[in-house]
Image (cartoon, rainbow, N blue to C red):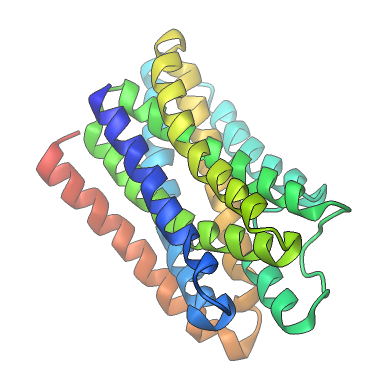
Length: 266
C-alpha cells in the first residue's frame, strides 16, 4: 500500500508540474517541441505495451490455467477498438496537433470534437489515464514492484505532453484559467486514483481477469502510440524528426524495465 501511495503521488505531481507550464508561458506552441516530445512519449508507451503489459498479461492469463489464446487477442483488440470508438465519437486523447492548429489558425479542427469539445477532450484523456492507473494497480497487487515502477515511468513519460496539451488546449478554448486548472486537476488525479482503486480491487479478481485487463490496457497503449506518431510518419518532412525520438523512447522503456528489474526484482 505504501508503494501504491508513493507511485500515485509521483504520477500526480509529475502531471501537475508539466501541466502547469502553459499557465506561465505566453505562447506554449513555441515553448516546447511537442511533436518530438510526443514521439518520445509514444516510444515509451510502445515499449510499455509490448515489453511489459503484454507479456505480464499473458503470464497472468496462462497461470490461471486458461489456454484459450483467442481471448488474449480479443482483449488486445478490445482495448484498441475501445480507444478507436472514443476517438470516433469525439472523446479524443490527441490534443497535440489540435492545439497547434488552434494557435496558428484559430479555429481549424484537426481531430473530431463535437460541440462542447473541451469537456469531451478532457473526458477522453481522463478515461485513458484511468486505464493507465488500472494496469499499474493490478501490477502492484501482484507484488511486482519492478514491473509497477517500469509502468509508472513509461506511462508518466506519455502523460507529460498530454498534461501540457490539456492545459494549453483548455486555456485556449475556455478563456478561463480557473476552469482550465480544474481540467488539469481532473486529468492529473485520474491515474493516481485508479492506481489505488485497482490495487484494492484486484484482490477480488481472478488471475485470468487480471491478465485480460492488462492485455486490454496494452491494446489501448498501442492505439494511442500509433495515433500520436502515424500522421507525422506519413509526411516526408516530419517523419525523420519523429522516428528518432520514437526509437529513443522504445530504448528508454527497455532501459527503465531492465534497471527496475535489476534494483527491485520482479
